[in-house]
Image 1 (cartoon, one colour):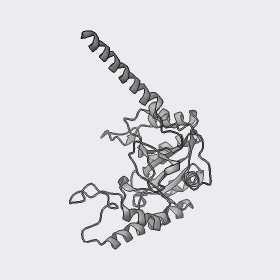
Image 2 (image 1 turned 180 degrees about the vertical axis):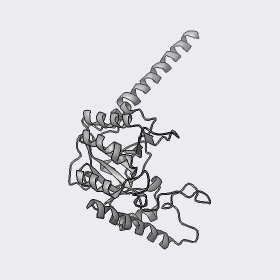
Image 3 (image 1 turned 135 degrees about the horizontal axis):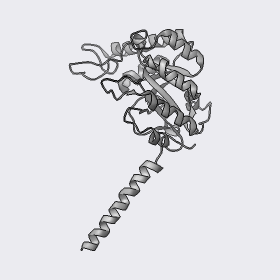
Image 4 (image 1 turned 90 degrees about the vertical axis):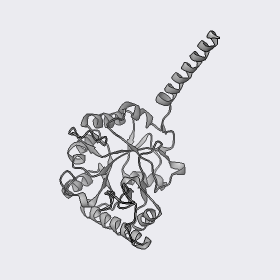
Amino acid sequence: MKNKIKILGFILLVLIVGLKVFFKDIITVGKGSIPVITYHSISDVNPQNNEYILETKKFEEMIEGLSKNGFTFLSLVDLENIINGNETLPKNPILVAFDDGYEDNYTTAFPILKKYNAKAAIFIIGSYVEKDGFLTWDQIQEMAESGYISFGNHSYNLHDQFLDGPNKGKTWMSAKLENETDEEYYEKIKNDLIWNNALIYQRSSVFPTAIAYPGAMVNDAILNATKDAGITIGFIGGNKTASKLKNLDPYKIHRFHIKKSTDIQNMIRFLKSNN
């Protein structure tokens, strides 16, 4: 009996070790994938230990690692061309994205991206531009003209969340106001996105055709308004898998959020699609 228990214990141990090796050293996003990694703020100042503020060293470790491991950095235009069949899927594609438009995207991340010849995309909240801690229009223009940074829509003023009431925790984009009709709600979203598109176009000379939905929250009204605002690709977030090109929904492209707790080297390994 004791020998049987020992044998069963040994088999269980082998299975556990095998599964650990399988998931850590073998599993990747897979062939035909278009992985997207998302950041927010890149800063060494983080007194509240915010998971979405990544220190400079870890950010550079990721960009350097992607560069040295043969990844192809995509712009939003590159991605759209791939989706539309105008470009082929390159070896180990990666889209590096930033949400909100923090000033350190320019002061800290931008120099690192240029150092490794890496493209990236920033999704702008229009009403936040020029506010303390956020990008200025001059910085946006400089980055757009550099060829390294493309810009997308993160709403003009529908990013914040309801602080109380039945919609608490939802974004201003993802839930209707009290007594707001379906038509009014749709028009509000569409007009917000059109306005933000126009502002970004005026300052970057590139019309944004991509959106990162605020809070990664999306519904039918948002999808319809997004399409009618001239946007052709959309990103959700916090996913566990990357979108595959062959069955991709262009308005619900998956993204991985990179946080303080992310194991950078393991993430780089995982992101390889080996196309």
